[in-house]
Length: 451
Image 1 (cartoon, rainbow, N blue to C red):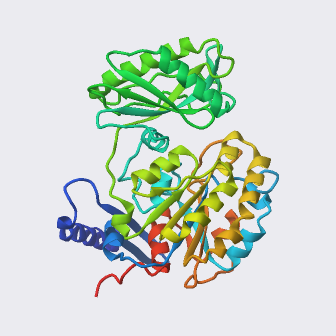
Image 2 (image 1 turned 45 degrees about the vertical axis):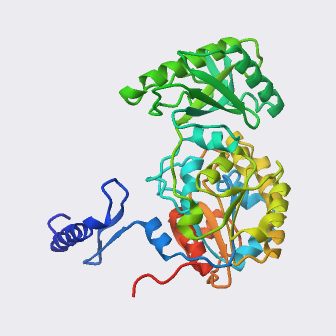
Image 3 (image 1 turned 180 degrees about the horizontal axis):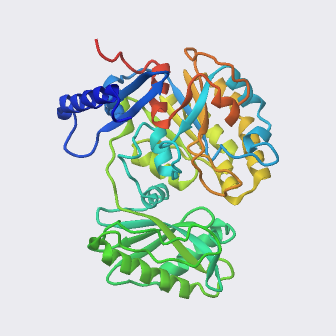
């Protein structure tokens, strides 16, 4: 391949392009370069070079309009077949199917093919932020979502109460203990822990088994490995410093985990803790300023509320049920130009491996689609942040079904909203980072690029 004359032309042209555009990029690694290498197509060589900062271009082209965008994220929607069908295929989705038949469809990759994303980077892509450029720890997302006061020098992490038996973590979610029990455990630990190495430690309860822990002291770095085996029936793990400056933080965290396990030794289920997503307070450009939008998040789970807050969205008060999400959206719809709705239940069922529960959650969400359509948004998109197959009981790299409904969307041949059907859609398979520019274009919120 390297001896092919067209390959030499490709190399020369690519080098020329990068030299000519060197001044376009700041000193930091904020550029986005995608290269499609030469492919022999019947004796001819085809190649392309894409050199751009998508967020910068989209921001510069955006302008304020009254048109409205609704983005419905059914968390963990995609899956793998069980008895021949994914949960989405098995669910009763007459409204999503009818909507798909009137929309343009495709599949999205949150980062790129083969990469399994966390919820943070997966959502950042949907909101127009390059997840390889803006790195957010899960801890800060959860902390912001539950209203934790996080200061510049604080270190936070997302925690799970878990079950430890005979030296093994047998249940990473402690049987999904009730949130009320979680609150009592956090209260007990806050009362009995005391300080560790001159560090104030506070726990903040979340939903079910989840909590946030905040370490307030001096000299903390968030360059730490997760203190979580990630799967059941493995021994617990300590955090490790990834850089020398994180040694103090690692010591404090590991002492905290040991003390906590001792204090919880008599608890039947929640008798140890797992920590991941160590992070400090980041700084992100506000979505409203970047894209001339007035965005709002309708999400119940703390992590998604936290992420939305970090990108500058307003946060709506919403109850715990799927219906609450849609009812709240109806109430606040008139005041915003970008409405993000988040439904967690398909993901939770997928992580638990509960195929029937995932089917039930998707079917329930489908019943509320007519209420979104009744709002008459200029653009309505339905997709997911990532796939959570029940077979894997975890996030996966599989692409997400995507539909976009607007008067300017070219309808394709898709008549069922499913992974397989969306693969044949007009949009094909594309990066989730393209979702927001696509929504804005159909809402007439982007000017022409170039003369």
